[in-house]
Length: 172
Image (tube, rainbow, N blue to C red; front, side):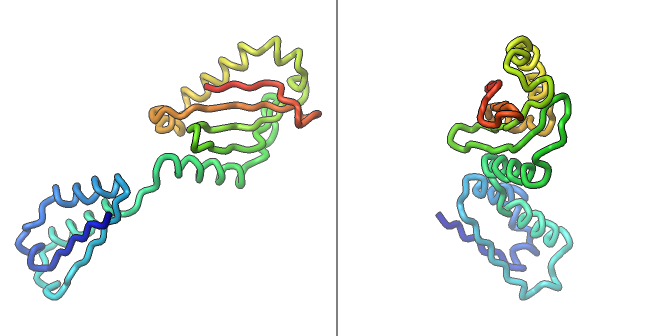
């Protein structure tokens, strides 16, 4: 659906366009409607400063915004490319992060190393590991928007010695 809005310098000069019109631009863009704005600056010298500011604010508010799902995919990909595999900390290493758009799940792939790379040790400490990961997700300010949107977080922990062996899996 295309919404075409045409403004000219005369309407801005007479302040016929109000701030609520620019809010409507943003509202329409939120629902992924394409918005085209055309401006005529024949009488640009006559524009008051307020009109120019409203014009700039309107264009900024109506600019394309990526969806939360697209942002999650992008951030997971960027983090994986930039930092993974991470150095070993507390006997674990982050191998990659992906976002499953169909299930709305952030998936962290980890490797357990050293003394934690043993199924018996993991089984004995399952509750502790679960509590630590749950607390980590809840306290993360960077994940707050995703938590509020109802996204889930899955941790898949593999053995460093046997990479195909899953030692621990949890969905938070």
